[in-house]
Image 1 (cartoon, rainbow, N blue to C red):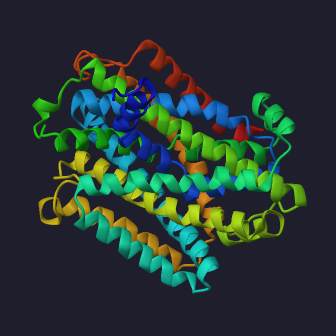
Image 2 (cartoon, one colour):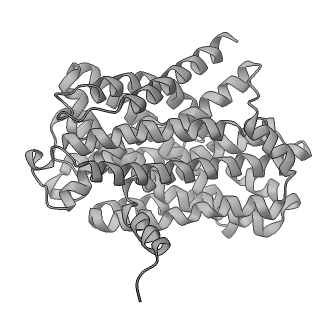
Image 3 (tube, rainbow, N blue to C red):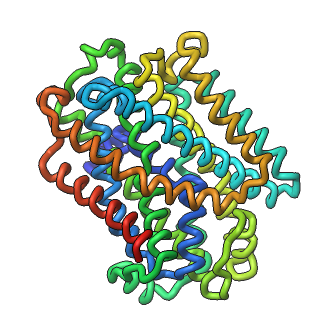
Length: 421
């Protein structure tokens, strides 16, 4: 029996999904979930419109990073090294490592707090167990296996749209606040907007996306730099679909987390969220056990997706800057310092948890820091993407360059407004 056109289209779409869908899902890490929960609890549905803004901007930035990795055969740091002084790039990757380590610590705390709520076991045990499990998988599994696991973990994000529909909403008001932008009026609202931009358009995702393009090419047998250079229009088109789908679902989940916390917590006067556990438990009286449990399970699951991405992105950046052997396709002995950095940042994240950090506030302010750092890095990405020689005669399209430039200006403007309003 001949295959129908819709079936062929769906099969082609599923086949195209790879690094882009993983990157998009990793964007909704516990840091993102905490940021969106704070936005919904404090401001209700006023910031739902940001999901429509961040979707095309995030997609454009990630498509540009994917193109850089795809056509040059190098990760982002390897390309930045060709255009900027080594000292400047080293400063960037050190800042990336510090921000990612804090993010890992806060993500582990958020996951552990959620798991503790479900099991009634001390959350500190879960911090250690989750860190050991993620570290073991990163070292022992091949890239092919890691990528496969991460793709399946994307499904946990479905917990958030389901939770929103279980709770119920005034869809007329939701539509109005989605289509009509309500601009921030004070420092706190601007800081929340910067945090939303920073957790959606995050520096670590730039490095991860480009490096995963290289990993995919190595997996296909293109083990030398020369063999990885250049890409066909078909290959670039497939990756654009992959990244576009990933960005769409990432921002869809963001929309529903803000909505869920707005119609439960904010509606009932709960505006200050201090822990992930508090966010989930506060849902229970208004949304029921099922919705609160779904919210919590999603938080734990997405942490397993995000932490390898956070640790790996900094390791890729350092490895390319300092000329180390690198790649999740290599064994520990073949990329020793690359894996030492992954294990070190994860271990430092565990240590920070035993120093009494506040998980949700740490997650939120990590997002703010990312929102302030990202536009500086995006300027460098724009320069690389427009370099015809570096990009093997396949620079970014004019439209793509303009959209990323708009995203850069918007993030600079939000960051400045946070300090001057």
